[in-house]
Image (tube, rainbow, N blue to C red):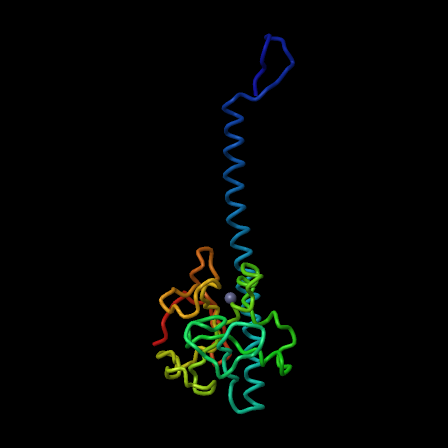
Length: 212
Ligand SMILES: [Zn+2]
């Protein structure tokens, strides 16, 4: 701060340099805050997603106790269950091997809140197309039908089956076009997904990791 005008003036003012420094500091702090808020929001959605996958895991195992098999995946996007209709690229989540988690879990009372069937990151981003984007469900496991053309998807290191994941096809993707890349909702650059394994654990994994 310095005195301006006449030598004996009582008026104080910032110099241009001082103002520029203040503006620069505020800009830097704002940028840090925005990044931190984005990270916190993304982390919150990941945790909420993992909690939903745990609920789905409990429902799947309860269903399995009652019927001695997991429910079939829903093969066609929409608001009705569509088991036995698994088609490549036409499901509410994936591309044939990964179609939608079954609405039967809700209709049969294993899950009370239907919003559990949607990854919270996608539910917010594509609210108007929610039924195109249910969690992807491994419809190639033997217990869930196994007729989709693949063997059980086992991890070679752990032997665990991947049951449910956040993977999705963009809701505007033509269902028949299998060349379109799948997408992932988590991480600031959207390259991560949560996966529910058959031993009931949920892990955040790099999206697109193949099952070996
Ligand atoms: Zn998710």
